[in-house]
Image (cartoon, rainbow, N blue to C red; front, side, top):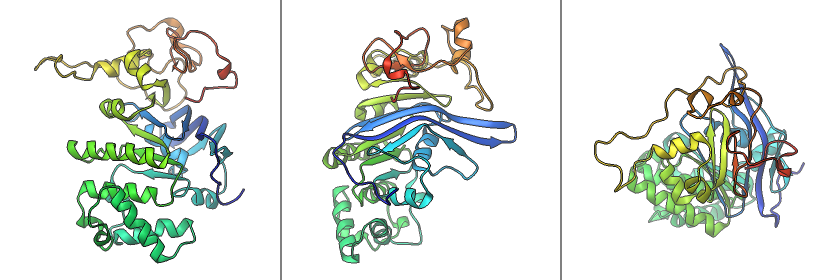
Length: 346
Protein backbone atom coordinates (compact mmCIF):
# COMPACT_ATOMS: atom_id res chain seq x y z
CA UNK A 1 0.00 0.00 0.00
CA UNK A 2 1.25 3.50 -0.79
CA UNK A 3 2.13 5.81 2.06
CA UNK A 4 -0.65 8.19 1.13
CA UNK A 5 -4.18 7.71 -0.04
CA UNK A 6 -4.76 10.05 -2.94
CA UNK A 7 -7.82 12.29 -2.87
CA UNK A 8 -10.56 10.98 -5.11
CA UNK A 9 -13.83 12.27 -6.45
CA UNK A 10 -15.77 9.84 -4.26
CA UNK A 11 -18.36 11.35 -1.96
CA UNK A 12 -17.79 8.66 0.74
CA UNK A 13 -14.95 9.65 3.06
CA UNK A 14 -15.17 6.98 5.76
CA UNK A 15 -16.92 3.63 6.00
CA UNK A 16 -16.55 1.30 8.98
CA UNK A 17 -18.22 -2.12 9.22
CA UNK A 18 -18.54 -4.12 12.45
CA UNK A 19 -15.84 -2.47 14.54
CA UNK A 20 -15.12 -4.19 17.87
CA UNK A 21 -12.75 -3.30 20.72
CA UNK A 22 -11.72 -5.71 23.47
CA UNK A 23 -9.60 -4.87 26.53
CA UNK A 24 -8.41 -7.48 29.05
CA UNK A 25 -9.21 -6.48 32.65
CA UNK A 26 -8.81 -8.43 35.94
CA UNK A 27 -12.47 -9.51 35.89
CA UNK A 28 -12.43 -10.72 32.29
CA UNK A 29 -12.64 -9.26 28.78
CA UNK A 30 -14.11 -5.78 28.53
CA UNK A 31 -15.99 -5.17 25.26
CA UNK A 32 -16.60 -1.38 25.15
CA UNK A 33 -17.23 -1.22 21.39
CA UNK A 34 -19.39 -3.90 19.76
CA UNK A 35 -20.25 -4.23 16.07
CA UNK A 36 -20.20 -0.48 15.39
CA UNK A 37 -20.73 0.50 11.75
CA UNK A 38 -20.40 4.08 10.52
CA UNK A 39 -20.21 6.06 7.30
CA UNK A 40 -19.42 9.71 6.63
CA UNK A 41 -19.69 11.59 3.34
CA UNK A 42 -18.00 14.80 2.25
CA UNK A 43 -19.59 17.88 3.78
CA UNK A 44 -21.56 15.77 6.25
CA UNK A 45 -21.57 15.87 10.04
CA UNK A 46 -22.23 12.59 11.85
CA UNK A 47 -22.81 13.10 15.57
CA UNK A 48 -22.20 10.15 17.88
CA UNK A 49 -24.14 10.68 21.11
CA UNK A 50 -24.64 8.79 24.33
CA UNK A 51 -23.86 8.96 28.04
CA UNK A 52 -20.34 8.74 29.46
CA UNK A 53 -18.82 5.27 29.11
CA UNK A 54 -20.96 4.15 26.16
CA UNK A 55 -17.94 3.73 23.87
CA UNK A 56 -17.98 6.99 21.85
CA UNK A 57 -14.39 8.05 22.43
CA UNK A 58 -12.99 4.51 22.13
CA UNK A 59 -14.75 4.22 18.76
CA UNK A 60 -12.94 7.33 17.54
CA UNK A 61 -9.60 6.14 18.90
CA UNK A 62 -10.10 2.76 17.22
CA UNK A 63 -10.73 4.47 13.88
CA UNK A 64 -7.54 6.51 14.31
CA UNK A 65 -5.65 3.39 15.55
CA UNK A 66 -4.73 5.18 18.79
CA UNK A 67 -6.03 2.62 21.28
CA UNK A 68 -4.01 1.61 24.38
CA UNK A 69 -1.47 -1.14 23.72
CA UNK A 70 -3.51 -3.81 25.55
CA UNK A 71 -6.66 -3.09 23.56
CA UNK A 72 -7.48 -5.26 20.55
CA UNK A 73 -9.65 -4.03 17.67
CA UNK A 74 -11.28 -6.10 14.95
CA UNK A 75 -13.22 -4.88 11.96
CA UNK A 76 -14.72 -6.36 8.82
CA UNK A 77 -13.79 -3.29 6.82
CA UNK A 78 -12.54 0.25 7.39
CA UNK A 79 -12.35 2.34 4.22
CA UNK A 80 -10.89 5.82 3.93
CA UNK A 81 -11.57 7.43 0.54
CA UNK A 82 -12.50 4.01 -0.78
CA UNK A 83 -9.32 2.18 0.27
CA UNK A 84 -9.27 -0.35 3.12
CA UNK A 85 -6.96 0.96 5.87
CA UNK A 86 -7.71 -1.61 8.56
CA UNK A 87 -4.66 -3.65 9.55
CA UNK A 88 -2.14 -1.60 7.56
CA UNK A 89 1.33 -1.16 9.05
CA UNK A 90 1.85 1.47 11.74
CA UNK A 91 4.08 3.63 9.51
CA UNK A 92 1.43 3.72 6.79
CA UNK A 93 -1.27 4.58 9.34
CA UNK A 94 0.95 7.29 10.80
CA UNK A 95 1.22 8.79 7.33
CA UNK A 96 -2.58 9.05 7.17
CA UNK A 97 -3.13 10.51 10.66
CA UNK A 98 -2.87 14.27 10.53
CA UNK A 99 -2.85 14.19 6.73
CA UNK A 100 -6.00 12.60 5.29
CA UNK A 101 -7.69 12.18 8.69
CA UNK A 102 -7.25 14.40 11.77
CA UNK A 103 -8.58 14.43 15.30
CA UNK A 104 -9.47 17.25 17.69
CA UNK A 105 -9.19 16.00 21.26
CA UNK A 106 -11.23 16.95 24.34
CA UNK A 107 -8.58 18.78 26.34
CA UNK A 108 -6.27 21.06 24.32
CA UNK A 109 -3.92 21.74 27.24
CA UNK A 110 -2.89 18.10 27.41
CA UNK A 111 -2.90 17.71 23.61
CA UNK A 112 -0.53 20.62 22.97
CA UNK A 113 3.10 20.17 24.04
CA UNK A 114 3.89 22.77 26.73
CA UNK A 115 7.60 22.76 25.81
CA UNK A 116 7.15 23.94 22.21
CA UNK A 117 5.73 27.11 20.71
CA UNK A 118 2.43 27.19 18.83
CA UNK A 119 4.27 27.90 15.56
CA UNK A 120 6.61 24.96 16.03
CA UNK A 121 3.76 22.54 16.66
CA UNK A 122 1.66 23.77 13.75
CA UNK A 123 4.59 23.70 11.33
CA UNK A 124 5.68 20.22 12.42
CA UNK A 125 2.31 18.75 11.41
CA UNK A 126 2.65 20.07 7.86
CA UNK A 127 6.35 19.28 7.41
CA UNK A 128 5.77 15.72 8.63
CA UNK A 129 3.36 14.95 5.80
CA UNK A 130 4.24 17.33 2.98
CA UNK A 131 7.48 18.49 1.43
CA UNK A 132 7.31 22.18 2.34
CA UNK A 133 9.82 24.76 3.54
CA UNK A 134 9.75 26.38 6.97
CA UNK A 135 8.50 29.60 5.37
CA UNK A 136 5.63 27.80 3.63
CA UNK A 137 4.67 26.04 6.87
CA UNK A 138 4.71 29.38 8.70
CA UNK A 139 2.49 31.00 6.07
CA UNK A 140 0.03 28.11 6.24
CA UNK A 141 -0.05 28.32 10.06
CA UNK A 142 -0.76 32.06 10.00
CA UNK A 143 -3.48 31.59 7.37
CA UNK A 144 -5.26 28.91 9.41
CA UNK A 145 -4.92 30.74 12.73
CA UNK A 146 -6.65 33.68 11.09
CA UNK A 147 -9.27 31.33 9.65
CA UNK A 148 -10.13 30.03 13.11
CA UNK A 149 -10.55 33.56 14.43
CA UNK A 150 -7.23 34.22 16.18
CA UNK A 151 -6.15 37.83 15.80
CA UNK A 152 -2.50 38.90 15.40
CA UNK A 153 -1.80 35.35 14.26
CA UNK A 154 1.85 35.95 13.36
CA UNK A 155 2.58 37.06 16.92
CA UNK A 156 0.89 33.97 18.37
CA UNK A 157 3.37 31.63 16.67
CA UNK A 158 6.05 32.41 19.23
CA UNK A 159 3.79 31.84 22.23
CA UNK A 160 3.51 28.69 24.34
CA UNK A 161 0.22 26.90 25.14
CA UNK A 162 0.12 28.17 28.75
CA UNK A 163 0.03 31.75 27.44
CA UNK A 164 -3.31 31.15 25.69
CA UNK A 165 -6.83 30.85 27.09
CA UNK A 166 -8.79 27.60 26.79
CA UNK A 167 -10.78 28.93 23.85
CA UNK A 168 -7.64 30.02 21.99
CA UNK A 169 -5.94 26.68 22.64
CA UNK A 170 -8.94 24.87 21.19
CA UNK A 171 -8.82 27.11 18.11
CA UNK A 172 -5.12 26.25 17.75
CA UNK A 173 -6.03 22.55 17.90
CA UNK A 174 -8.59 23.07 15.11
CA UNK A 175 -6.01 24.91 13.01
CA UNK A 176 -3.51 22.08 13.59
CA UNK A 177 -6.07 19.51 12.46
CA UNK A 178 -6.56 21.48 9.23
CA UNK A 179 -2.88 22.04 8.41
CA UNK A 180 -2.72 19.28 5.77
CA UNK A 181 -6.24 19.76 4.38
CA UNK A 182 -7.73 16.46 5.65
CA UNK A 183 -10.80 14.78 4.19
CA UNK A 184 -12.02 13.62 7.61
CA UNK A 185 -12.11 15.40 10.97
CA UNK A 186 -12.97 13.55 14.19
CA UNK A 187 -13.85 15.96 17.01
CA UNK A 188 -14.06 14.26 20.40
CA UNK A 189 -16.17 16.54 22.61
CA UNK A 190 -14.18 19.61 21.49
CA UNK A 191 -16.11 22.04 23.71
CA UNK A 192 -16.22 20.09 26.99
CA UNK A 193 -13.72 22.25 28.92
CA UNK A 194 -15.02 25.60 27.60
CA UNK A 195 -17.66 28.00 28.90
CA UNK A 196 -21.02 28.23 27.14
CA UNK A 197 -20.22 31.34 25.06
CA UNK A 198 -16.95 29.90 23.76
CA UNK A 199 -18.65 26.54 23.09
CA UNK A 200 -21.10 28.21 20.71
CA UNK A 201 -18.26 30.02 18.92
CA UNK A 202 -16.23 26.82 18.47
CA UNK A 203 -19.23 24.87 17.13
CA UNK A 204 -20.10 27.65 14.68
CA UNK A 205 -16.46 27.76 13.61
CA UNK A 206 -16.30 23.99 13.01
CA UNK A 207 -19.49 24.10 10.96
CA UNK A 208 -18.22 26.95 8.79
CA UNK A 209 -14.80 25.36 8.22
CA UNK A 210 -16.37 22.05 7.30
CA UNK A 211 -18.49 23.69 4.61
CA UNK A 212 -15.57 25.74 3.30
CA UNK A 213 -13.10 22.83 3.11
CA UNK A 214 -15.77 20.23 2.20
CA UNK A 215 -14.68 17.72 4.82
CA UNK A 216 -16.53 14.88 6.46
CA UNK A 217 -16.82 15.32 10.24
CA UNK A 218 -17.53 12.95 13.11
CA UNK A 219 -18.54 14.92 16.20
CA UNK A 220 -18.61 13.00 19.48
CA UNK A 221 -20.67 14.52 22.27
CA UNK A 222 -23.14 13.83 25.06
CA UNK A 223 -24.81 17.23 24.62
CA UNK A 224 -28.00 16.88 22.59
CA UNK A 225 -28.27 20.66 22.35
CA UNK A 226 -25.00 20.65 20.40
CA UNK A 227 -26.28 17.84 18.21
CA UNK A 228 -29.48 19.70 17.34
CA UNK A 229 -27.47 22.65 16.04
CA UNK A 230 -24.84 20.89 13.97
CA UNK A 231 -25.76 17.29 13.01
CA UNK A 232 -26.79 16.01 9.60
CA UNK A 233 -27.07 12.43 10.87
CA UNK A 234 -26.97 10.99 14.39
CA UNK A 235 -25.78 7.68 15.81
CA UNK A 236 -27.00 6.99 19.35
CA UNK A 237 -24.71 4.68 21.35
CA UNK A 238 -25.56 2.71 24.46
CA UNK A 239 -23.39 0.15 26.27
CA UNK A 240 -20.95 -0.23 23.39
CA UNK A 241 -23.50 -0.49 20.58
CA UNK A 242 -25.18 1.86 18.14
CA UNK A 243 -28.84 1.49 19.11
CA UNK A 244 -30.39 4.00 16.70
CA UNK A 245 -29.32 6.09 13.75
CA UNK A 246 -30.92 8.41 11.26
CA UNK A 247 -31.10 12.01 10.16
CA UNK A 248 -31.26 14.70 12.82
CA UNK A 249 -34.92 15.24 11.94
CA UNK A 250 -35.73 11.55 12.33
CA UNK A 251 -34.00 11.22 15.69
CA UNK A 252 -35.44 14.39 17.25
CA UNK A 253 -38.92 14.24 15.74
CA UNK A 254 -39.52 10.47 15.67
CA UNK A 255 -37.18 8.76 18.19
CA UNK A 256 -37.76 5.01 18.03
CA UNK A 257 -35.48 3.25 20.51
CA UNK A 258 -36.60 3.49 24.17
CA UNK A 259 -33.13 4.72 25.14
CA UNK A 260 -33.21 7.55 22.60
CA UNK A 261 -36.65 8.59 23.81
CA UNK A 262 -35.37 8.51 27.38
CA UNK A 263 -32.42 10.75 26.50
CA UNK A 264 -34.66 13.31 24.82
CA UNK A 265 -37.07 13.33 27.76
CA UNK A 266 -34.17 14.30 30.05
CA UNK A 267 -33.67 17.63 28.23
CA UNK A 268 -35.32 20.63 29.91
CA UNK A 269 -37.43 22.61 27.42
CA UNK A 270 -37.37 26.42 27.78
CA UNK A 271 -40.88 27.72 28.37
CA UNK A 272 -42.28 24.27 29.14
CA UNK A 273 -40.16 22.86 31.95
CA UNK A 274 -41.23 24.70 35.10
CA UNK A 275 -38.80 25.90 37.75
CA UNK A 276 -38.37 23.23 40.41
CA UNK A 277 -40.03 20.55 38.28
CA UNK A 278 -38.38 17.13 38.32
CA UNK A 279 -36.34 16.48 35.17
CA UNK A 280 -36.64 13.26 33.21
CA UNK A 281 -34.43 10.32 34.14
CA UNK A 282 -33.77 6.81 32.89
CA UNK A 283 -34.10 4.33 35.79
CA UNK A 284 -31.52 1.62 36.45
CA UNK A 285 -27.81 1.44 35.72
CA UNK A 286 -25.71 0.68 32.65
CA UNK A 287 -24.86 -3.05 32.48
CA UNK A 288 -21.32 -4.31 32.77
CA UNK A 289 -19.58 -4.76 29.42
CA UNK A 290 -17.23 -7.44 30.74
CA UNK A 291 -17.90 -10.75 29.03
CA UNK A 292 -20.67 -11.64 26.59
CA UNK A 293 -24.13 -10.11 26.90
CA UNK A 294 -27.16 -11.75 25.32
CA UNK A 295 -30.17 -9.87 23.99
CA UNK A 296 -30.81 -6.13 24.16
CA UNK A 297 -28.29 -4.20 26.26
CA UNK A 298 -31.05 -1.80 27.38
CA UNK A 299 -33.48 -4.54 28.49
CA UNK A 300 -32.82 -4.16 32.24
CA UNK A 301 -33.81 -0.47 32.11
CA UNK A 302 -36.60 -0.59 29.54
CA UNK A 303 -40.27 -0.19 30.54
CA UNK A 304 -41.37 -1.99 27.34
CA UNK A 305 -39.15 -5.06 27.69
CA UNK A 306 -40.46 -8.43 26.49
CA UNK A 307 -39.12 -11.97 26.72
CA UNK A 308 -37.78 -11.88 23.16
CA UNK A 309 -35.69 -8.80 24.03
CA UNK A 310 -33.50 -10.80 26.40
CA UNK A 311 -32.20 -13.50 24.07
CA UNK A 312 -30.31 -13.71 20.81
CA UNK A 313 -28.42 -11.05 18.90
CA UNK A 314 -30.56 -8.00 18.14
CA UNK A 315 -29.19 -6.16 15.11
CA UNK A 316 -29.74 -2.73 13.64
CA UNK A 317 -32.66 -2.95 11.24
CA UNK A 318 -34.92 -0.49 9.40
CA UNK A 319 -37.49 1.44 11.37
CA UNK A 320 -40.44 3.16 9.69
CA UNK A 321 -38.59 5.76 7.60
CA UNK A 322 -35.91 5.25 4.95
CA UNK A 323 -32.41 5.50 6.40
CA UNK A 324 -33.70 5.25 9.97
CA UNK A 325 -32.27 2.19 11.75
CA UNK A 326 -33.03 0.90 15.24
CA UNK A 327 -31.75 -1.94 17.45
CA UNK A 328 -35.14 -2.79 18.98
CA UNK A 329 -37.46 -5.70 18.18
CA UNK A 330 -40.53 -3.54 18.90
CA UNK A 331 -39.64 -0.86 16.38
CA UNK A 332 -38.26 -2.71 13.37
CA UNK A 333 -40.33 -2.73 10.18
CA UNK A 334 -38.74 -5.79 8.60
CA UNK A 335 -35.63 -7.13 6.83
CA UNK A 336 -33.60 -5.03 4.43
CA UNK A 337 -31.18 -5.97 1.67
CA UNK A 338 -28.59 -3.57 3.08
CA UNK A 339 -28.34 -5.77 6.16
CA UNK A 340 -27.66 -9.05 4.39
CA UNK A 341 -23.90 -8.81 4.86
CA UNK A 342 -24.03 -7.79 8.50
CA UNK A 343 -24.67 -4.57 10.39
CA UNK A 344 -25.66 -1.56 8.30
CA UNK A 345 -23.25 1.33 8.03
CA UNK A 346 -25.12 4.03 9.93
